[in-house]
Length: 271
Image (cartoon, rainbow, N blue to C red):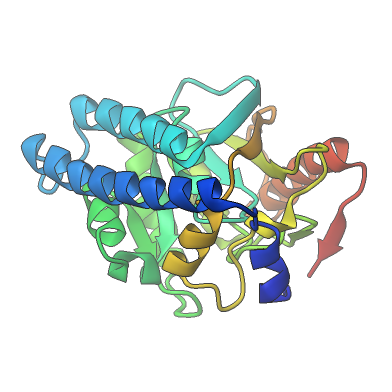
């Protein structure tokens, strides 16, 4: 996992004056109430026992879009998304990546097991049909099979094959194990590139959720910002015919790296 000075990350959020502090308190209240509303909505729609119905998927997408508005997100989306069931792979910078991508299409995602223990967020994640994986547990083969079943059922699944987050200035290698899923299900792979930008259009490393960051600390600091600028690009899809999982993984990584380089002018590759 990449390293970053935590105090530098917090400083990136800082704004002086009374109004930003009052605005942050107001946003905290709205976020908590909205999370509670998400829990109630999931219960009313029966998402806890049947998360795969179209009405639940549509409600999840609308919920994520409004959540981004509460946070002050300005989202720019480029490229063309595949409308059919697809295996989505993306670079990973923050927990915010998930609602950003989920605001654009119906999908399920693979998340680290720790997210399931987060207050309210973990409960909502389960109601959204999230798959959980414990890092370093050797579960990848079984999870790839579970994802393949979801894909064969006509669903779209998002994974973060770096296996961790970065500060956005680098792209780590992709682990190939989960790329068995689209090959088993015979569906395309669509790489995504997520970039957090500052007011000058440069990569905003202060938005990264890395190292020992705690969710509530990161959210509290983030809510001090007036605006969060994010660019999401849907890369051209990949057909895995004639490839094994390693080749498919390499091609997907290349497309994400290419787009991030276009966005920033430079990108550091990390092992």
